[in-house]
Image 1 (cartoon, helix red, strand yellow):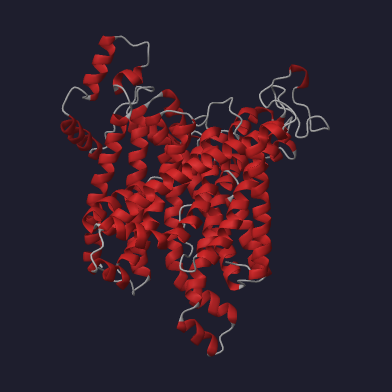
Image 2 (cartoon, helix red, strand yellow):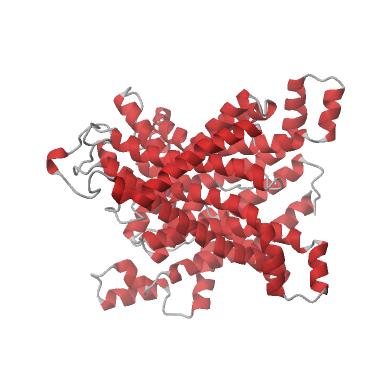
Length: 315
Length: 278
């Protein structure tokens, strides 16, 4: 197991390098000189030149990449043009909201998606399955921003007991009741993702159900719910773990919309605002963090599934 | 997938009817609408639905029904654009990678990394580089699905490339282009049609999200996403502004999903729930 983990860690290095190259070239793909684009039309030549030197744009491109990579490895992602602060600090400020929202959402996804998926697979082809699968498909067809606005609308009109925008920090105030600000956003964010999980759990279980040992389990007279939960679900769990890992990363994307709808001070809204402010170092920093995060999650999923399933070869 | 053939046909028929209505709206919008979708009428601001304004009016006094009908046109244009971009580049990448394994290793690594960037974030990165606008948002959304299409094509083509009939035709002296075009491509058509349906569906959601964030089409263009974005401050007073454009998106995407699901069962029994990136 130890060597497997080591091998797997080493194999992530080329992926990380390709990713870093992509993210690095991002700023250079923007048409025009990055320095003058960032400073806008009002800047004079001296200012632009100063920023160019500050960003190292006057040096050869490969040197720029190596310097950037070296700094990134030490946790230095450059300066935000807008905040005049290190990018890492700007990102860190949004992290509390984003992480809490993601965790809250994952809890909902697990609580809704997995049981619904099991139910759907257990009664596949029947009425229950049609209702569950149909509902999942409907929720996958609803744009997140629309669902968010719809919830704000119903709450604002019908019953005013849930806050519909903003999120005062829990860490700073120590007030756990602030979490109620995340209820509507988490519901919004979990809807399309639960739908996806329902579908994948269902598909994974139906796949497993065709296996011989399931027929054996039935043939020896086990009760159907035992067959489903102990034999089918436990084996389908491997796929579910992988699904949940990727769903977690995918949340970052939809959170961009959700955080904007509910005016949450998280990383997602930071992306949109940074685009509107042309604060490219921040955008670049966020993309890098997300990609590295994805590669790590991928790694963890791989190791966990290997651990769960002795059949997966540790090659 | 979850339906008996008879029910499946009924459900697919429902989906098809919705899509035909949407297509009709998109093609004949100028003939259908009772008002100019962009004509502002100060005296008719935020009017609830009635006989004159079927879906009510927005904050600028524009007829919402006319705007929603024109929205179908934007949805069709965006959907077709995204599907074309995703299929052309995705299939090219996928087949070439499968056919030339050395190239494939590099390209597929790249695709894997790109797939690691969450969908909307990737689209936003493209918007940052390219700027806003109809064509750019098509490319941005298309980029999301180039990677998934490339992956699926790659998987299928590799399987096809190892078939004995490809070996046979190679030993008969057929060239690479001929093999790719006449012997690999035809086997990809069915799964790709299914894939295209889902891309069309999810492109609607992604493009509407870009519009909603103010990073897609110019704000005055009557797309469904823009309509919701523009009027979001008025929804408590005028809920129809949220319901009709939103309903149009949901109905369209849902119909596409219904049809896509049934088509997948019909056209391609091998192709299971592969579309991991909803």
